Length: 212
Image (tube, rainbow, N blue to C red; front, side, top):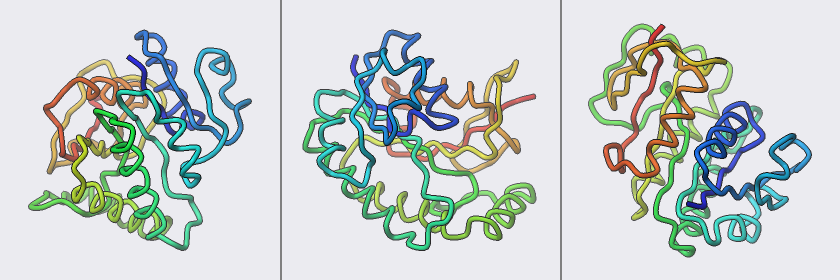
């Protein structure tokens, strides 16, 4: 199967790309700087550009069956609605190219769900990000609202703090409750890849965390 990975040079994207290659996926990647692909540069089909360039995005999504995105709003963004517009453009490209599946990373601290449980540790995470990344939280909520209005087969994976490594036990997945304060990046990448052919979390936004 051929898939597209958006954000393949980032912290999660590098691990996701390595694991996808290990599972035999053919990969297309949209990257600003191909040299940042490192050892993966000769193993993936890359298009130089970013997700704000619709022609490059369209080129990257052509011929793929699934899209996995780890691209976050910019750390210093002052325009949260920009990412709702980018998500809308991405959805249109997905539909135009007949892509079957879309898996994107959100966050455990942003709103958008109904009847969710906000434990003390989850409220603490949201309070911290409200101080350090308030516009980003707004952007992620707007992305989610845009996804919910779409007709594509999406899953929005919502992690808390992402850390290096892999847990020794199963991850906990729930669409209303944050079970733990962190998720290991290997666990997160494995979960995202599993969603390509799974319908369990179709059109849902699971919160994922790792056991110690």
